[in-house]
Length: 266
Picture (tube, helix red, strand yellow):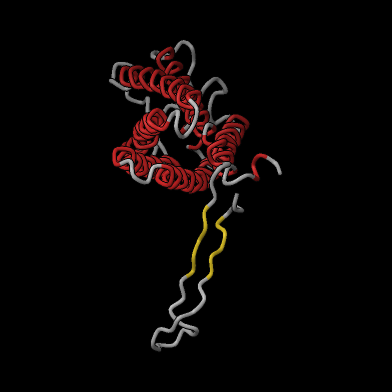
């Protein structure tokens, strides 16, 4: 059995691979059509102009669905491993809410382009990156509280390092983008897709875009740490029938069916 066939480990793998493919394909298309500069454009800029914006939006919507599935499976796993730990249960529920909000933000970013709906796009980015960072932080705390009983200490340390990486990238991006969009470098910053080294604010622009790509990679790294955990879980869906027909009759006992959901039992 291959590693991705064990449990639900294919979920975080598919999430990372698919999202990375969305970035790469839209970037290649935008570069080929000369819609953006090759040197570190904003991720959103590679999905601003047709036809790449269509590809960008469609693929990120699917990525949001994969992310919802991954976050839900993680929630169920932590809950099943700690059924009587009240503080872990509360943190786990908070993590679920934060994760779902981040997924919603990803869909908003995908469907509302920066040049057309700047405020909506920024709100989606805050949900994706800001709330998503909080989700990673909560999961790191859960990893700390579950070691060494549930898993080894190395899992916690790896996730902590990734969260620190994400935090440094977020701080750099927030600081430089705030300065860049303060109005001191022109009023057409939002619509600008091409930058030259001689342009005012070019250095801040490059730092901001580099931090954005770095932050995205930190998200990839964090979800990849789920692969080993997801090899130890599978889910089932249960169909409960209230009768042998679909007519309006009195309920009668029937044999219910339990079917594997996405994965075989371990």
